[in-house]
Length: 120
Image (cartoon, rainbow, N blue to C red; front, top):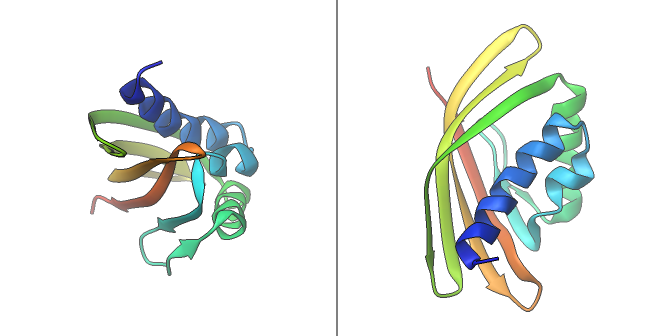
């Protein structure tokens, strides 16, 4: 699998984990020192914090997440993906956009930074 295909698969794996209700699977693509930067909340750093965030989001009703990848680029040991999001949270429909930053290290490609926001 090419580096580009790998980062695209990791991008999709986060969403697959959320939709399966599996916070462990949703957090698996993140580096041990990775950071999640959700809208309106402090930065979550490290696997435990990221897993806890996704668990709370799943328990809070986050579902039917669809991410549409609009760009993916690899440059050496760094990569960036970005796209649009749609999801349900209880009776709310959400839309937004995201950016993921990846780094290739001894553990392979992992998400270093994940940030998104919602459309008004």
